[in-house]
Length: 417
Ligand SMILES: [Zn+2]
Image (cartoon, rainbow, N blue to C red; front, side):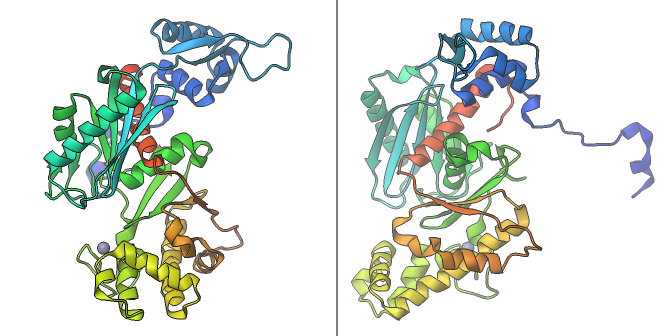
């Protein structure tokens, strides 16, 4: 510590303002509380946010006049005492938001209103692994047209798009250094999409949008600190700390799949050695399967097919196939134990494609994880696996759009999720 750091004229304490919900304007806090509650009487809003009934009356009246809220006669949940009070809720079918998830198999999209109700869905097959950004943008536009046709609404009703895609994604700038769905590196996906679609677009990686789906619509709604680990073609992770998605200091996300679980270990598709993905991703299992099971070359070219074959062999009692899944499960347990030790989350949610990976969700993996975690008499971190439909990613992306739009129309220009 030098002399300057002790000088009284530079002050002390954190310089940056808090990012907690208290930093939001009161009208936004009220709106978000009501949206999260569904339907709620005014007096409950005052109690929950610790503000006067008069302030609630004034601010909710402003929000009703502006078309954000609506009164619902006699619909409040607390009807125990006499006449049911008037409830407040988000005015339905206003301020539409699109959530879109791009993948190398099928793109999907949902249309939500400002209350989070799903009005329509659409999907588009895209069987080509990597494509030029112009083709991906074409496909996204077709998907948007189909979605609005399904909803029977004009595109002009949409106010924001949330977009999730695999790879390394800078949420703040929309810059994508690398994504498996794109042939180019260093593309500003946000700029391309906004220019083509004529709407504000908010971009994030697919593990983050899946985490937002849990935070906005799933089990994470009632938890302030939790982790989501996804096992798809790769291994992804999202983390919620203090009720919001943690995006890291450089905005590039948490790459649990490329944390090292073995020094000088197996070669990962990222070019480095010993990454978790090199032991548990589908291409890694496929690679092992091709040698262990002597599968023919035609099958060996497709990691997905290889995995299906390996899985069938394991289910049929093939010991070599079972051993491959068992070893991968042990590596996954190492990663889950590390997540538990580093962040002490209230829960770890395993999410993603389950059908092919049920060996990763069995008791052995959880027992191994607990063995690798320093317990000191405390209960182990609960691990849950969630099976969602394909549209969950798009719904999470829509939450990204909802959050940004809420800030834009009710906040003071702050960016949050
Ligand atoms: Zn790697």
